[in-house]
Length: 178
Length: 188
Image (cartoon, each protein chain N blue to C red):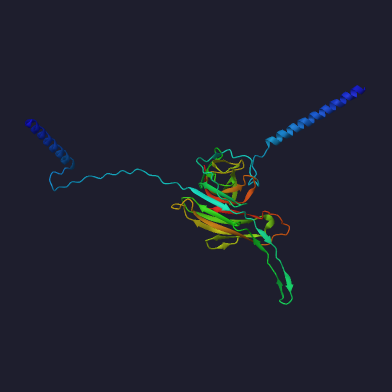
């Protein structure tokens, strides 16, 4: 009789554990499937990863600009024409953060539509000495073909502490969406 | 020997005459004085126009300010004034409030500055003044033109320095360096 009771109790425990395991697995799957891939916009601290589209600038002069203590000095080379191809969700840009800059960069591509400014793409880290020719559009980017006004929003980060600088830069753009 | 010399001279003379006639045939000048004309020909070969390259340097100081609250001093009953009165003021180390923009582009650019208050410090305003340019605006400095770097030495580009000053009162609870606003430099 005692043995039977014990067997029954063990069965209940096993069933409970099995239920908890199934619940945990289901929760994990749901969380993974619904994970939001949108990056934090204009992060307070520098992203850990260098942007996948970043390439080193060839024949770059790495002599750093003189920067005041606690301040910064950057050099920006860019084009004010941007083309977005909807089929591959890419923006073709020309943007360089030459090696003489003392800051790393996060670059935002912002479009003006219906009187609103919308972030279409945001890079990961673009260290000094690197350039971008392509930006990947955010999953949230919704656009139709045509010509738009927009801007680059350039955010600066300290290479050592990762802190965002008080200064940022806006560069007005002409954006063509195909 | 004489015969040989004569023949050689004769051949030399004939050859010389021949060369003159060849020259004459090229220029078609048969008489002296004479004249002739020749066509001058030219062919256009396409060159190239340099594309516009935007390149700017932006340098800024620490943008760290110190707010010193008013020092009332001591009441002087004789003069009916406070001796040693010092009004509240904002100060920085030399150069800490300066933002400098240099143009290395092959075209002109416009430089604009804007101060945006942090939501917790709306009572403090930023004012810009461009050194070497006229006009002080409250929180946005109107675009300052910087002509292209064409013809300028690389180590001496056209540049503008902008100074930031603050007005308003800072709360006494802010005793460590705290972010109270941001500066946006627009390069148009």
